Image (cartoon, rainbow, N blue to C red; front, side, top):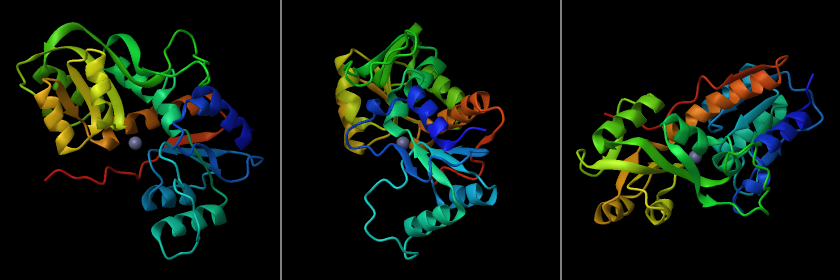
Length: 270
Ligand SMILES: [Zn+2]
């Protein structure tokens, strides 16, 4: 039976914490690393719904993409949703691990999976991580923030939007640009990554895919004639949490592993 420290070591090989951004809060954030992990739940975010599910199904470990807690905790009471979740998880003995930006950037991380899933070729990091940042690439897969690559053959933006929707199983996605324009070179950064639009343009991408961004970033994309596709933050990352549950299930076949069935995108489309 694996103990939590074994699983932390595996996750650190899969998504080395050295790859995380300096501002991030990654690794084992709650719990006793010496405890056995018989049940493991992955999720995108610890929310009241996913927290309740983990406790009801007696998870020993939650692997959440988004760190919880993220900010320093100065007061731990039941007066806030965050305080209630922390107290409930600690009382129930549920540990919490977050790989976050290490998972975004890892060799087989979210952005790599996203780029491969869209059929891109010659996939490279949008921003390369220096070798000092845990240069432990598995195989030949690249390390770094975001990804960019070429489409095997040019497509119209309208057709490529459909391709993104198909991969993420979305009914709709927002986009900026003429649907009849041609797309050849695509940059990707999961989550809320409009700040990387200039990097996407710098590597010569004619289309940038991210989860969400500001109106002004949309205007900047339009002004620079870069197509922009916004999938929603949840959809841009949730698929990788499901895939991570499969990876953990393969590695720890004696454990019960599942991706949260209760967490939902809080944003609805009317
Ligand atoms: Zn995110």
